[in-house]
Picture 1: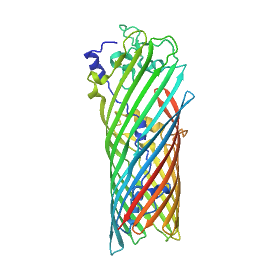
Picture 2: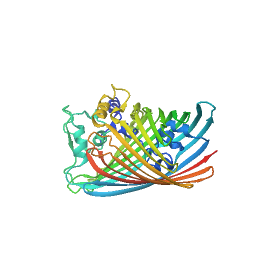
Picture 3: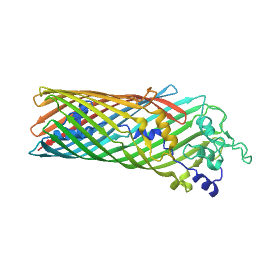
Length: 479
């Protein structure tokens, strides 16, 4: 293995830059819209209705419809299966996750005036579940990451300035690639792999969440017009662990195997506000309009990596971890992200106080998301504009009551954020039931979710077929 000296450490650190990209903005902009069992039993369509704390998250004006105080909590169990298709090989990964989904308290204040009701609420909701796990594997006879990625990325770059965050520095210091003529200054590299033909494996494990703590107030004017406002605080934690390996080299080569591991950890806080109104022009018709401001995130990011190479010619195993060489402090960064704003138009028809039909229409311009420093992130912000577009989400739900039992069904189609529209569309189908016993209400819902997407990693790509289900149970006490 090459000698890694103090001078090269210094030269490498002055050029370090973490790999923020357009996917980071998209990851923290997509919302799953899960809240309470009643709301999700109706497909997430609740912008013109009230009576559930989940509705406050969609349109804060729905808070004004509460006529009593209420305490509620919601539990969630999420099951997910991801099938990856890579080099004509199929691999499946499964996981289950139990969590608290929603907590809320509503305070009702009746007033003897035209503004006949003033309500306040504190809500906590898990807006996004960032957990995902999948595995892809296949035999590649044509390309190796050594030749197809590390070697190409390293060309024309001095060895002291190779990037730690795309693996080229690790590949160089473990002798997977080397300088053709170290003293020429040409910065041309060659690969120590004789010929491709090996098993490639990639494991991805993502964990994390975005939680929202909200403070809302609302008022009702003669029970015809309802208005509301909420101020919300976000808590974000995301960890992505990646392990890539190549083994079983079939051609003559000194390399038996190598493994490249990376950890990306992002934490931070954010804020947003929501305003909304609901109008009741006639007794059985509700019209809603809501605006969700951008989420403003202040984030801290840490990146670590290591590479292990096993040689077959008696050479010792090479191991390289830049964090052991005094670089860890330089692999952190603070930055800010603005996610896109969202508008929601809603309509609900109440049928003889027995049932209802509700529809929400949402519009989100994902191309307006951005990193705050436009000079530092000019290239990334331009990529966001070029790749992302305005998406429309349509949600619909139906509810019918049989005495103290309500049955529900819902459907939602969430538009693709990508301009090419080939992937990224999501569909939800839901069903639910609600039971009332005096002041106590219990709601149960089941949601099925299907998505097809592409995953890319250093010039390797895989089709991902995701099928997941979620069970929500909400317990409510009105007093």
